[in-house]
Image (tube, rainbow, N blue to C red):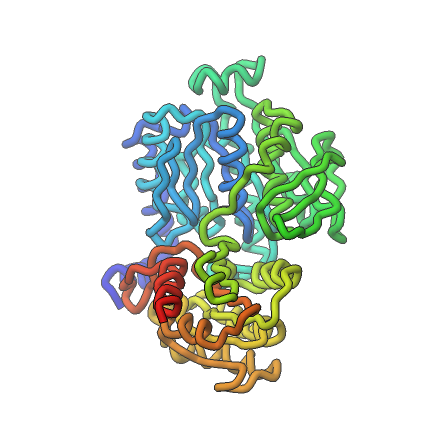
Length: 459
């Protein structure tokens, strides 16, 4: 155990919380409160946050705004992109403020920040003057950090309450383009709520501002919030070119795959409306959206072997099931799935639920390292393998346990026949693997896959 981890373990939570709060407020002060000069959007939820940010950023840029964003995927400032290599969804307090100051200096109009409940526990949201907040979805996850689903839900709702309590900005402190959107002197708050989630009314009650109800009409759960601002996706279908659907009965098509992305796009459209962009304008630009790196990312080099390889960030059951739903629409023979589960005490129960899901859906399961942290990698793999075997998989036939992630990917390619698809999940575009004592080694699933494919093609 490192000294830093030892201090964190034995320091009272109240003391750690005060330390985090002081850092957050000092960071805002040191960088001269940059969020007061930007229209700031927070995106929270269990999944889909980074993807929503990626789509929203493109839609806003298509409408003529200069945008900066911070997400699990990347740090982006006015066209300059750096992949996130920090192994953090929401950056530390000083780093967030530093990036926000950079956005101000690069003349950005808007900042979009992936804002997490775990980040809230460490006060990373403090000192950020938000104008809008999005909830993409909500289901059981991160219970290890919060203790219960109810605590997790309350942490998300607290973000909405926090934004509601913030004083509305004087628009004269923002860019000229933002100032022209509203006639009033102050900037109105906006809250975009996925009303397919059962807790939608609770988030609405925690919101003081304009509420946008966004939902998929094909889902079973639809909460009635009574807001006039409703955006609805319907008739979502997968084609060979991507997905097609409707927004408020207007037809939409995009080259993006994954039917769940219809709602991720919808959240972006809602925010564009809040910023004065017409629905017609947004729909026109949806066709040119590209997928974020490491999210349902197809590796074209695999086609030389007659196979398909998709790299995806999915690491928990709901996201993995969504990936299987997408793959089922593609005409493939076998599904070979390379995956693992994160260590560090994170949601140990997930190992079993993910294992059973892969055991049920994949023809061949290959279990490997994800980010073990201080946990024993072999123990993680054993836990997952037990669940996979419950679904009928047999070791060394339809189940392989290979600790080294590169060797696991190579095994998958060795086993693949023309027409098969390989899924490599859990890390997406992440730039490192994390081992004991926080040791980080450079890693990118996409690059590793391409390196291995290159060897096979040369043979």
